[in-house]
Image 1 (cartoon, rainbow, N blue to C red):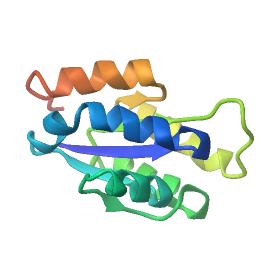
Image 2 (image 1 turned 60 degrees about the vertical axis):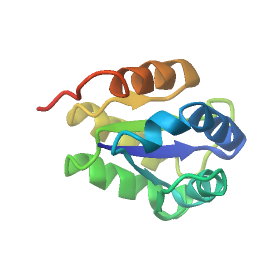
Image 3 (image 1 turned 135 degrees about the horizontal axis):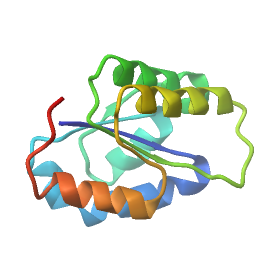
Image 4 (image 1 turned 120 degrees about the vertical axis):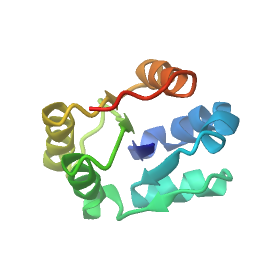
Length: 128
């Protein structure tokens, strides 16, 4: 299973805190993590093994969308900051559209991320 992780600047600490709560489950279930660059650095500093792509504004969101389009992702967790402006918003919208088109579960807040992580770490995964 491969999970993509993205967090806007104001949400990076929330992402690390969230992942820390599931560290044992995430590291013990053959789950690979991939993240946009800066988010990945924060996650790595918290002790997780993570594949880092480009920073979101430099193309990382598009790289994750490409992985989703190729069905190489099982879940995307994207802690967005809905109250801030983001110059790469078209990439964000494209990523969300790609997830919808290819039926990739997308969690954009803590509540949905918790539900999805709890589900995938306690039951067999759905295969299309």
